[in-house]
Structures are given as C-alpha cells and as structure tokens.
Image (cartoon, rainbow, N blue to C red; front, side):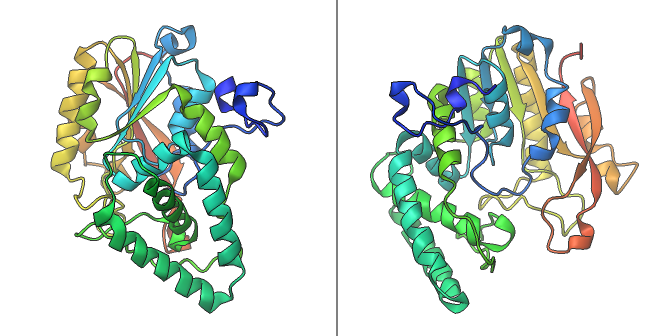
Length: 325
C-alpha cells in the first residue's frame, strides 16, 4: 500500500477521505531515468532503512525523481532533501509542491489548445512556447517564489511532453534547444500524478544548488542516493548537457571526494553510474575512484537514443558503502 503522502485525493487532502489512489511517480520524461532499476536499488538498500533507523533521505541530483518517489512511497522517512543544479527543474518541482491546482489548470488549457491544432499548427505552437521559455528566462527570479513560476513550470512541462524524445538539453548560453517531437496524441496533463506528487512532497524540501550543498543535511541517520549525470560510454552517448556546464571526469572525481566525506559522517550511501567496461574491459575509472566500496554491476537498457537499434542492454554500476544483509 502507498503511504498517505502518496494518495491521490479527488477532494481536498485536508479532509483525509481518499477517493482513489495513485502512486507518486515522475511527471516528466527524463534522460537517464531510473525506473527500470528500482528493483535493483530496492534489493540493495541498507537493512537500517527497513528497520526505520534512517529517517532522513537526501538526493543530491534529483533529476527525474524516479528513485525519490519510489523510496518515499516505500519507506517512512521523516524528512527528505532534494537538490539539483537545473533551475527550471527545481522550479517545476516547487510549483508542484506549492501550487499544484493552478499548474493543473494551466496545463489543461494548454493541452486543449495544442491538441485542437493540426500538425503545422502544433509545430508552430511548440516553437513559440520554446522561444518564450528561453526569452523569459532572464526575467525569472529562481530564488523567490511568485505567480510567474506557475506559467514557467507549465511551459517547462509542455516542452518536456512534446519535444523530441523527452530530452532536456541546453546550449552554451543555457537556452533549451530540443526540437519538436511530432507525437500524434501527446499527454501533456497527468493530473492524478501531479496531485499524488504534490502530496508526496509534504515531507520534502527542494533545494537549488550543487550536490555539495547537500552536506549539512547528511549525518549518521541519513540515507543518500547519488544519481549524477552519467559518464558517457562514447562520444555520441553523452546526455551530460543537462545545464550549461558539462559534468566532466573532473566533476566525477569531485563527486567521489564528496562521497568519501559523506561516508566519514556515517551516512548510508548508494550511487549509480554507467559502467565504462561496457566498451572497454580495461577501463577501471570508477573501480579506482570508489576502491574500497562495494560495486555491483547490474543489467540496464538504454531508454533514449535516436537510433532504435542502439537501445540495447548495458550494465550500470551501483556503489554502496555498507554490506548487504
């Protein structure tokens, strides 16, 4: 059974009379989403999590949120802290938490207007929204919540649901540059999911910032899941242009240093990344970075690739600083 925080209410949640249930889950498409690995992660959580002695969950790279929504639905966390450097992603999550009804109303109007158009009209509509989204970024105060955030979050979700392959990619100036996706009947508004997610966020604080800013919230009673931008397996597989700054090998090393600091605090840590041995059996990049920790290799499947023939099986790594029961 999902926890109360993940129930969908068809009436005001304060009345505590759930009419239907929907498990909180990602409302965005997201490159590198971890839905397919949730069973592998759950099988490897520390025993203290099931025992209830790790009441705080921290995720320094929120991304699409699949792991957060799953763990927050499964375990009784007292509090959760989510971090991400992507300003629009953090803004969208904050709107879902604070003003989901206004966001739903906005998306319903957008969906009706968009779907009423022919193919050419939809294409023009998409690029008009994308242009406005990029143009108005300079005007948005990402540090102070106001009414403009609802429209900004609505445009972000619309673009995510209608762009090519659901990618989020920006250019060197931070402008969203993914082309139109040409879906026949895209689902833009997922009302029950948004409502469930809003309720899930009740025990959660959402932070804009670099992963190192999570450190004050990490202590012995904390379970931390790290999902950094994956190290690309080759020159054409990179999805690290998640913000205007790439997540380079030097960033991966900086993360490993931070992982060690969190380990020294006594927190329980889980980290996932690509396995470079998929393409080079002698590439020990992560084995060297995380020497001394447990590293499991698990099967996965590429979910996003413009060439469908290249969406095959690969291995990913899971790094843990605790023994499995």
